[in-house]
Length: 147
Image 1 (cartoon, rainbow, N blue to C red):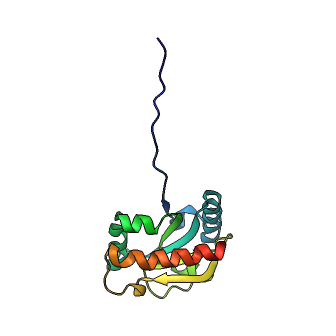
Image 2 (image 1 turned 90 degrees about the vertical axis):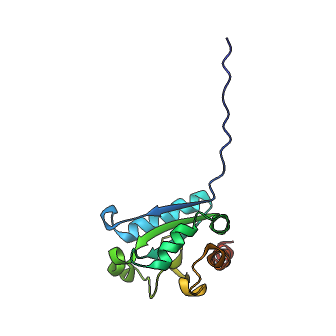
Image 3 (image 1 turned 90 degrees about the horizontal axis):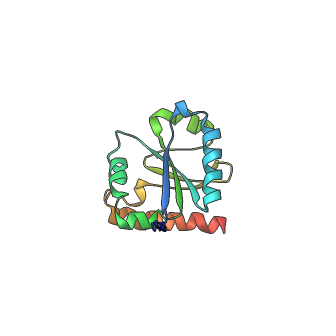
């Protein structure tokens, strides 16, 4: 009897998210590694700083399951950190975080590029419908810096 191979059609991965903790190593080394991974995948590397106590950050995580948010994040490699866990090391590595959620575009060495956006961009409306257009525009600006 002849074997038939089963072909499963995989959906392309639109974006990736990795949470890092201080127990994982030095921030500079972790961001360098993740920036290089993003480059290998053809994604843009974005550091996202949030806090567990932050309601807009929690809304962001819930909203990421929304199709508009999935489409906005297409081609983005997110490195997620908790501001309370990394505050000193973020500052020591040149990240100036004044509010959360904070999105920072990383260069190829995992350093800040002075391109960022915070939740202030969409105000108090923390719905996916409100967040997605602002984030998409930010990611497009980051992509244009790469191209």
